Every structure is written in structure tokens, then in C-alpha cells.
Image: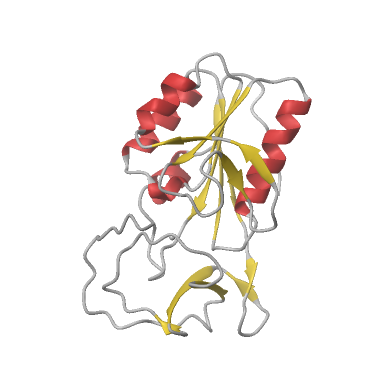
Length: 205
């Protein structure tokens, strides 16, 4: 596969995959390299993602980088003034307007690196991710390791008392190892599809 980095102007890099695939770790790695190169970097994350530390992006392995928690994607554009590189973690938690914000940053000449879940716990496209992936110049889809068979995992299984959660639960429910597993297509189990409404619980995925 041939990949050409843009030589001028801005662009969007999207890093996606299931939970435990290393998305935040890859985001942190790219941002650290930019900092080492002396570039001005700003990192944002949804304020509702408070699993580890609201003031940092933290990977499941413990790597971290300072970040700003925001509610409104428009705030990212305002805070990014003067930066060379902008990173956004857990981008799937934002509404569709986040895509317009990131496109505006790239159109303004910035390198934008966005990481998030491409599929929700039902195995359906998650929030703004389809539009973001379509608008990005570079897309990397990472895989985790299936906890059932050890194969390449591309899906996130939400569990309630050890069994697959019903599909009528809130789309957004922040959690980690206690509530989610990475699974491959074959081991992913469909929950009861009582309702497919777009629900949100700000207890926090």
C-alpha cells in the first residue's frame, strides 16, 4: 500500500477500531512525535470521558498526554488557534457537528488526528464516525485481540452481568474492562433488539 503524506496545507488522519485496539496509544504516539519536532500541539477530548483523568488522554496501558475536556466541538476550533497539530480522542462521543469543526481546522492548514470507535456495541456505525472517515485523507483501522478466540477483533461487546447487553440500552455508556470486551466477527453476540433508538446515558462508553 502506498501512502503519501500531504506536502502542504492541512489534512485529517482518522484512527479507528474497537475498544482495546490501541487507538488512544496511537494518537498519543503521533502527538508526541509532533511535540518532539517542536510543533505546537493541542489535544481535546469529550468532557464526559472521565474514566481515567478529565485533564489527560489516557490509554488502557497507562500512557497519557495532557488534554482539554470540551462539550462543544466549536470550542476545539477556537482553542486550536496558532497550533500546527490538533488531536481529538473519543471523537465518536461528539455530535455530527464535530466533522465540520475538524474539516474547518484542516482547511485552515492544520494537521488533525482524530481517534474513536467506528462501531458501537451493537456493531453499527458510531455517531459521526462514518462521515469523519469519509472526509479524512488518511484512515487507520486498528484491531484488538478477541477475548474469546484470540483472533483479530473488530467489534466491542458490551456485557451486563457477564452476558451481551440488550440493544435497547444507551448508545453511550462510559466504561472499560468491567463492561466491555473486544471480539471478532464470529464471537460477537447479538443482544436482544428490543429498540434501536438513539439513546444516550451521560453516566458515560
